Length: 313
Image 1 (spheres, rainbow, N blue to C red):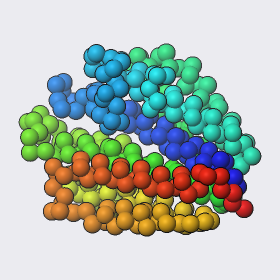
Image 2: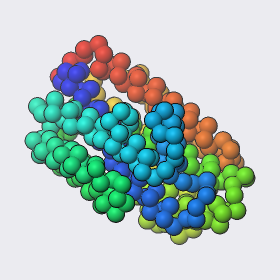
Image 3: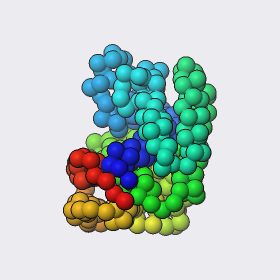
Image 4: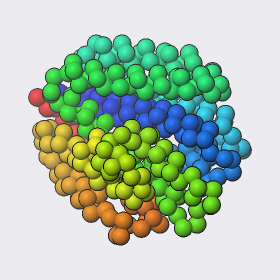
């Protein structure tokens, strides 16, 4: 398997996971804001903050309103992190990897890309936008189902899975940065009154509500939610599960595996988390440091397998 093909399927997975997570986050956040009073710390611009895109947004838009933010995150061709650009990257990487992917995956990706392009003009309509986001989430899950059920467990599959779980860990860390706001001593009275709704929403964004309740007997406490999403090794969207999975799939790949030491260090740091060692004011810094570590791990994967050209059989 050539390094350029490995790189394409790795980034196909990362972009596909990014598309689904963006759709999921915007969908759930919209529903949340419909249940909250206005003028709280959590608002439409919170979404831009999660993606670390504040400076890019302000260069394009002077105001923080729903339509501009939705267009920026979902449909802006000039913002590299927009959903439509990420989906275009999925399509291009799938198109150039047809020799290692089942044909059905390309067909599903292409259909989704055409559908989203045709519906982008309607994102100002909240009901139609929510319907489109649900369709995107379902289509992404369908594609992952095809990958799981139609692909041989070979190097292409391993690169796909490593990319997916690395991207998932990064996105989960960005979502968990919100917990610093929810647990801050300086949070408003309005935020304190709606704390339960906000923690439930954070779980919903990650499809974690039911699994959390099973693990914690329906008790919804901020410290327990954080520990579950950071440390639980059985839930597929927790940070520890995702980082552990990256290492599991890298193990199967040929060549030097020095980056497994980086992966193990990240996992050890996550497992060392505790509410006592990591008070609320340190969570944002912890997540920032995690994102830096994940980026270093991505760089190691890139330099080891993608550049220079490295052929695996």
